[in-house]
Amino acid sequence: MYLLPTISTLFIVISAIFVGFGWYHILKGNRKTHQRLMVTGAVFALAFFIIYVSRTLFEGNTSFGGPESLKLPYHLFLFFHITLATVGGVLGLITLWLAYKQRFFKHRRFGRVAAVIWLLTAPTGVLVYVLLYILYPGGQTKPVIDAIFGL
Image (cartoon, rainbow, N blue to C red; front, side, top):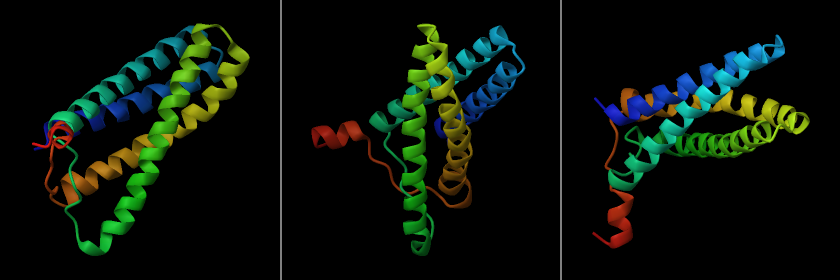
């Protein structure tokens, strides 16, 4: 079993669930509940990010172990997922900052886009996990830190 990828994928799903419920509560006018849910979602997203970066540095990324005919579609999908995750993460940070500064007009505008992107990022992340660790055995990994230092 791939413990860290499983935990990090679970954290992204939990994060998206909190974001979805947070969005629901702000639409209902429950500002305090919205705030708590969104901050909790951000904490789970941060936990994902810490695990992902640590694993990439010290263990490496898992290469696609599926059939050659799926490599290009997989990598295109992975690029799409990484782009979504990066844009969603940056917009999420901006949205949190705007809320902290009580600039709620801008927070609302950024938040809608950030939430939609994050709610798309989670299922695409689950699909990447399924392709890498469930449907096809993962390929080799090499820690980034080893590559950096030529080990």
